[in-house]
Image 1 (tube, rainbow, N blue to C red):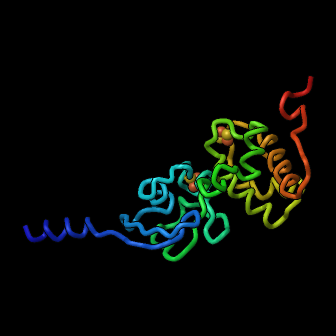
Image 2 (cartoon, rainbow, N blue to C red; image 1 turned 60 degrees about the horizontal axis):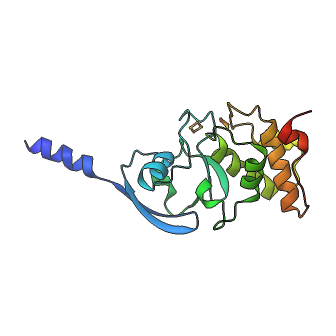
Image 3 (tube, helix red, strand yellow; image 1 turned 180 degrees about the vertical axis):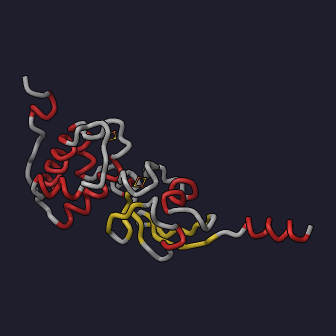
Amino acid sequence: MKQIKKRSKAKLEKAHISLRVNGEQVEVAFAPHKTLLEVLREDLRLTGTKHGCELGECGCCAVLVDGQPVLSCLALGVALEGHEVTTVEGMAEGTQLHPLQQAFAELGAAQCGYCTPGILLTAKVLLEKAPRPSRDEIKEALGGNICRCTGYIKIYEAVELAAARIAGEQAEPAEESIYGWQ
Ligand code: FES
Ligand code: FES
């Protein structure tokens, strides 16, 4: 009987950490074995970050930790004490979409959308480091993000469109990007 009591107490023990998420200081308690992906989705209700392979191979769970892309399925939640996490929910400013989100919407670069949060955040870091990346640089930066729907071309075009707009150009999507070759 004593042993049963001991076990159930151990089961109730939770990790308790404080971190910044999308610019807000938050405190969260969770089972200590949980990954950052699980903490975000299940304990903080930020479901924009997606479950995919959970093996570090698809990139759809990518978030930013202290400004760098991290696969949240491979990070333990307890390791995030005191860190800054950005998820796709933190990209827009109020009602103003991030230029990447706007370009993805205009070009149809998000189809089922499952890969999109991880790609948007990874591309955001790319544009911070290389404001006008070449097509090859975009491909390389997004090499760890798998998309089953788009064939990638619209994703690359959307990153280029966002880069042009962030640089102050009045850039619009090419007609063939939206309507195809007539
Ligand atoms: S779910 Fe994390 S890399 Fe696939
Ligand atoms: S839009 Fe469906 S997986 Fe990329």
